Image: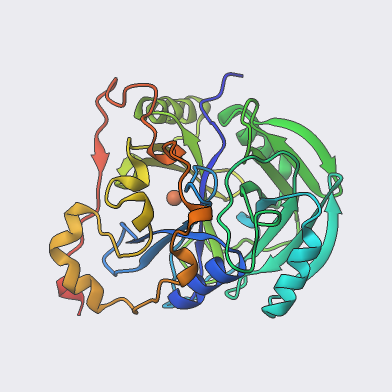
Length: 360
Ligand SMILES: [Fe+2]
């Protein structure tokens, strides 16, 4: 089938402490802190951190809501693993690097003929570093993680499901994935035509109790797939409804992009996302990404109330651009104008606007 999905856009975790999360993603995984902003839903200020590769590419960005106020429960019906693409032969480096930082991991393993290492975020979520060939996306590097080992962006993600059939139908009929193989309890699917970040696996875990759906520390909250325009978002929503997945959300204004959500039959929350032209560069220059807290314009008048309820965080030195990480001159993908016009349909955008002053 013709699909509107172009690959993974971002994946969203609920870690625990904010500084712990910043330190883990920047120092341990060598990610660039691309954006500091806040969760746009609800009435309690919660950070929203974005970590990505050197160009903040679509498909490299992990976003995190540090949610220490409440624990979540990992289980089936969730993204159980997020997998990063790393160069072939680099997993030995990563095993030693993780050991130096005391990060829990399962050693080097192999699945679908490729080596990977699975590790745990300090809040408990599982991540993988998977060797893959020919990934030309530009890595962010640190003084400890050089370009011959650094992550390029997402390789894919694993969804834990108690039953494969219904979720497989959702992936193939609603999102356009193609099944490409089975290895043990892992069923692998790919988006046709996508170059990177195109792989989803269903891990069949029939006896694993369902995980929580709420925000809660220690869980992966949702996965977002990339579509090109707002019109594609509406067409994807119409496809969901035609197939009977009637609980698709309205289109929400996330400032850097527009989003529409649906709960998939296996339990995983699935977002589709269309970038706004300018993307992450709407509110700060490329060499300033992630250095300061940016609020969406409709919250700017409440900045002092929001700041009063957030723990301060220190942006790491490794986030500051150096010559070898400097942009090459080409506009990063997230900043490129979108090929099709955004306004070929009238899209009503939904926003939440809480009164934070009343909360403290
Ligand atoms: Fe999202």
